[in-house]
Amino acid sequence: MSSAEKKVEKKIGTNLSGVKGMPDILGDHFYKIQGFFEKAQEVSEYYGFKPIDTPILEYTDVFTTSIGEGTDVIDKEMYAFKTKGGDAVAMRPELTAGTMRAYIENGMANMPQPVLLYHAGPAFRHENTQKGRYRQFSVFDLDAYGSEKSIVDALVIKTAYTILEEAGGKDLSVDINSIGDKECRGRYVRELTNYYKKHLKDLPAVDKERLANNPLRILDSKDPKTIELNVDAPDAVSYLCPACKKHFKEVLEYLEEMEIPYSINKNLVRGLSYYTRTVFEIMEEREGDDGVLRKLTICGGGRYDYLGKMLGSKKDIPAVGVGIGMNRVIESPWYADLKPRIMKDPEAYFIQFGIEAKLKSLNIMEILRKAKFPVIQSISKDKLGSQLGHAEKLGVKYVMIFGQREALDNTVIVRNMVTRSQDTVKISELKEYIKKLK
Image (cartoon, rainbow, N blue to C red; front, side, top):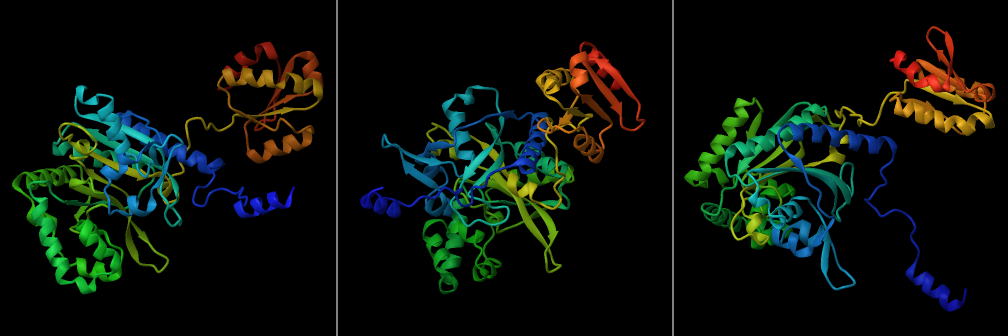
């Protein structure tokens, strides 16, 4: 390598490690995510939701238009860049905007309404990484389009609540609020702005910036001084118009009828600009390291009736949805460690040793697979003793032994590890024999 090349290499550097906050998903972690997805899918399908999958890359405008300038997601966290062709694109920071774009672009407004969709996949945000929070994270979304009725809000909340409950969630409750619609929110935002202007000296710099761009976001502030200030801030419910009041009252009545515990949280606004009317978070009560019980957010969502028009629809599209961070769920201490359907407890340990046996062993495993008889094996091991020892540790009921003699005779020895009895079975009769074991 020339000195010039060395200088270039030193300047550019070489980093062959994984990107920070974007972990590899291996083994048990993969199965946990898949197990949760299958539970979420099962519950969602029962309640009438159907699958959709949208691209990871969208035009940047899909997010800047819908999520809104002045939010941390757009200003600090979104991975956005230009393609070689000059298109401004972004890796999706959330799934809702892309799903609404797909609803409009694929003419779903012409289908019977409401259109109920579920959606799972990775999302990306450049934020500080910590337990349960990554730069690439898995999301399960529910979205309902085409109805402004309160029962649709209740359906989305009920479906998400049931998913979390059946995944092992304990002591769950719903924090809920209504931030009104275009008829009444303006008056509330003005009152809120006036309140914060009176306390301008107490606001940190980030919240002063929000006051100019998006005053509602101050209610979502994590700054201790602002949290204290928010206690006396005007609440949105007091400024709701009659239609929004009626809608909110009905949503609460549905929750009461379904016996879903809830609390009205006047400071709950959710962080994204497209929300309107109902906003909610599903919470869990968990004891911290200091022994104090605290409510922690597991997932959140709400209604977003104006997002469709922001993304090019000629008229508003009533919509409500929720996003569940799958990483946060599977890392919770209560998670039920759901197994995906492909994971079957092995019925037998398949032992093979000797070159003649190994040549035929994969064909025998295919017979077992077609017979839907799950087995475990150590295909690279050669010694009978080590494989038998492994089978004993696993506690399987049966062991199938296939050695040199069995390979020549086209037979398999099937040993019952409980009774210690065994049969010698011809390979051609193995499938029928297995049926008797089940």
